[in-house]
Image (tube, rainbow, N blue to C red; front, side, top):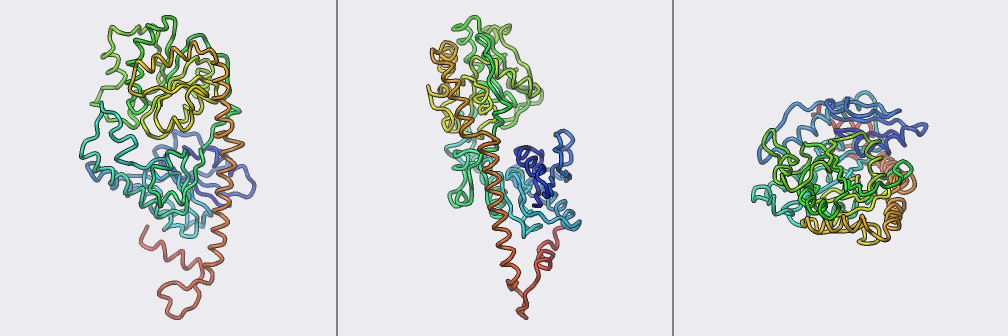
Amino acid sequence: MRLLFVHQNFPGQYRHLASHFARQRGNHVVALGEKANLPRQRQLPGVKTFGYQVKTEAAGFEGPAVRAIHRGRATAAAALQMRRAGFRPDVVFAHIGWGEALFLKDIFPEAKVLLFCEFFYNARGGDMGFDPEYPASRESLLRLRVMNAPLLMSLDASDWGMAPTRWQERQFPAHHRARMSVVHDGIDTDMVTPGKPDEELITYVARNLEPYRGFHIFMRAIPEIQQRRPKARIVIVGGDEVSYSAKLPPGETYRARMLKELDGRIDPSRISFTGRIPYSAYLDLLRRSSAHVYLTYPFVLSWSLLEAMSAGCLVVGSRTAPVEEVIRDGENGLLVDFFSPEAIAAGVDSALSHPDAEAVRQRARQTIVERYDLNRVCLPAQVALVASLQRKRADAGAAADVEHLPGNEAGVPVGKEQHRAGDVVGLA
């Protein structure tokens, strides 16, 4: 097969799937990402990677849609160069989020386009307006439609979608869910394995320390955690940038804000802020964790939660919909009120003295092995989905050979190559 993976930070969610196909004899695997980002990412053996360049930015109310269109045009221009060089993918994979998928169907109309459907914005029931400390403005609610516009355009120009969790799938409009499968990107449970927990080691991990992942609430739980558990050590992993939450004034961070708010109420000698750490060090930390805290708005579910469970952590998680899809309170983890520092502290205290802690840890790992295992569950499901799409492409291609194109007054069948060339005029 000829496969094209499109992701601004390739490989992103496609690391395992692209590697799988690149290892198979006879496949031609190509990736397209943003030129500025690619040098920072690990390249995959057997995958030819190309870059596109985005030159125009846009701000203001209409900014999300305009930026997506600019990115989509840049992606289309690079894809058109590939086409002119003779590359014709059978299946195109693209993340829905940034506009890269907008025009790929116009460049490769004969290909099946499979979207990675990570998130769709809603005014109710999701992240918007969830946290009263950071309320949604009237303007931000209106802006959701602008943010969703390129997502809807991409869905309209695709053949199928793949959402990582059932909750994330449910955020999309019902008529689009009819062309969507729920398949997680997968956790390598052969690599992410349990270890021996240290005594009273409490861990918290996020890409960046920000409200979307409950950092502010967890910090406010620390005074009581330290009072309840005077010997406990807390390790907090994450950067000081902002991934999803409200931007702060230049020079400010959510970590500095919370440390200032809690000055004199916490013992900083028992708290370690590591920043971002290598993946191997991160896995080692999970294996040594006695209680792992994972909090999130109703938003994209983090890989870190599933990896923590695969590593046999006893997770204290927020009682929010994405987490509830994975954790059953008291069975394979503990659930607490996202907004209650007292409940979080009590949950951590309970985890550290849980009489059935080892059994809960084992059930946490078993959940990941059964439902999210990369090599035995998720990757086979993804490969099967791609095979199904490829078969549909072959069927459609056979039908296209005898179709009469609009405007062909003589009624003479037109070859597919002529049809393709006509579809990309004016996109260079």
